[in-house]
Image (cartoon, rainbow, N blue to C red):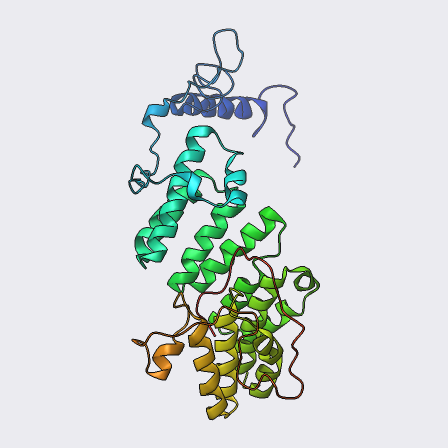
Length: 329
């Protein structure tokens, strides 16, 4: 039998039940501080008395914790930026006068500490300069050189790449190639030397790159190629050239790797003759480290085998250099 539904009154689950549920939810949300509470829509305090959103209280920056600042190593009074080369001093002019003086002082100390082989203090000064002037190419290059001297190849390469990008100069290619050797990637050193940018290097930088490539070829077991790559430069070198000792030493090492022991010893001796600054260990290899060498400063100083067929007497690299590989061969 069909039961007649009332014409009016609450229906099960109808509007009255929904309103009652909404009321209970509103009370609960009001107690919890959510929307629908005593302050109206939004969380209590989100809006001011006029109903507009309330602005957040300003942050008390005195309570913001900052990482502790690394203390800078002290600078002696005679650490004057005037001792830097002209190009680097020019770069520092982009800084304020006070900052340029501080950065220049740290760079001067880097040079002193590298000469003293105090690599830890050299790094402290280089990092202090980089924190002050991280967008100056010469500063990043200096930090890279410190990492290079410390044998931290990956860090050195990162700094050299940054300096190269900031300056647009290619003069760091020899150092970058040598770092690739240090990272165990001699094939990349050879690739860098064959890049179009390498063709535009100054003469001194091309000599340094050739020294690196000869060593990279030897790393790859290509000893004959190493000899061939460096031979012309070694035979054309003279005592007046700043790279003479290093290029002759590199040629001696290539000859030794190729099994030409006797000729290698002759070239080690030739390197020692012109190594007035002790840039190589040629004298130690010969067991004559305490002996005085007579250095011929003439342009026609004899070198072993210079009269052999194929020796190039006219090709003599010249020029000044800014950076060079330090002692890797």
